[in-house]
Structure formats: C-alpha cells, structure tokens
Length: 169
Image (cartoon, rainbow, N blue to C red; front, side, top):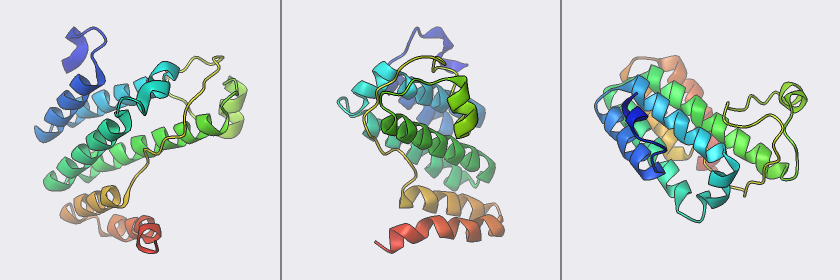
C-alpha cells in the first residue's frame, strides 16, 4: 500500500494520495485508502472532531473526486464499489448518531443488520455528531455517467430513482 510508510498520516495527506491514485486509475489503492479514511471517521475521536476541522468537506471532496474519475474513465465497477462504501459509511454514522449512548455489541450488529468496519471495538460506547456524508445528486449523476460510458444501461435506468428526491425539492 502506498501510505504504509507513513505512521498515522493526517486525513489531508490520505485524501491527496487517494485523489492522485484515482486520477492515475489505481482503483485498488484508491479503494484501500478511502476505506481507511472511512474507518478513521468511524473512530469515536475522529468522528467527534470531524465537523470542527472541515472533515465533512474533505470527505465529500474525496468522494466527489473519486467518482468523477470513475465517470471520466468509464469504470462502473470501481464507481459501484465507492458508492457502496459511501452509503455504508453514511448508514453507520446515522446509526451512531441515533444511538449516541448505545454500546455496540455483536448482537446489535447481527440483529440490526449493520456490519461495522473493523476499527470499531465491539463493546465500545460511541458518541457521534449527526453528519451527512451520503450520496448527493452530483454523486449519483457521476455514477450514471460511468454506467453510460461503459454501456450499463440497466444501471443507468436504476440510478434515476436515486436522483428523483433531488429533483422534487
């Protein structure tokens, strides 16, 4: 991995490396870095300080840049992987925000159908501010572009349903 030589690199460095990897078409490396950023966000300390340091803007910027590169290169496979990760992170943050004093256990994970990323301890109490990092209309449009360029018309049609709420506003 590209960032392995750095001990606990700051989020800005990870973001820059992830963007560079995406521009270069290094999708596995990009995916690995984006997932490590997501794990850092799910860490209670990182999540609490996320909104104070402009981390949400940084996170959205990474997501947008990576999806834009997928659209430019027509790589729908990579785009779908990133969309799944973005939606999973959003779901986890929403769950944590709604259960601020909850203790995460394996029972909660199994019954709630929530698969938490490995960085969360199974018995830790977590307090997270309500943050919105899910897909925006521009992100869905980028997925639509990647699907269109790669000839996945069924995905194009299915993606339109996710744009509908943004158009109705």
